[in-house]
Image (cartoon, rainbow, N blue to C red; front, side, top):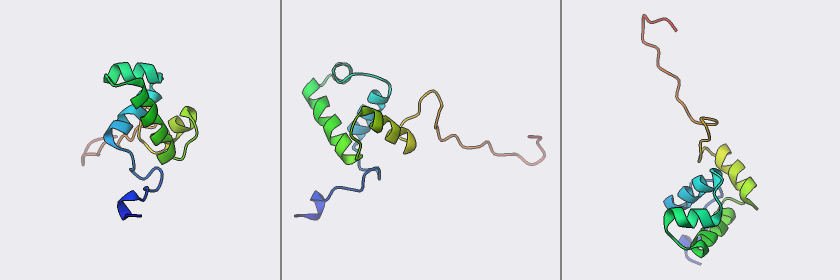
Length: 95
């Protein structure tokens, strides 16, 4: 087995840009058919992406995938779990 065939640790940035895009669409509540229409790809391709994503993230279903995505900061829903940086205080300004 070549070293390229070794799967990265789940949740450690192992998803492709397309897979992350699909995770965002799953998190927004779209079905596989709706995702395929939005991305202009076949539903079977979406099904394959979802299957690969579930394997890579060690999640068993869409709900677990959504939780993983929130916990790992891959998605932001209505500014919940968004990584907002605190505003820098300028010397002499009141908080």
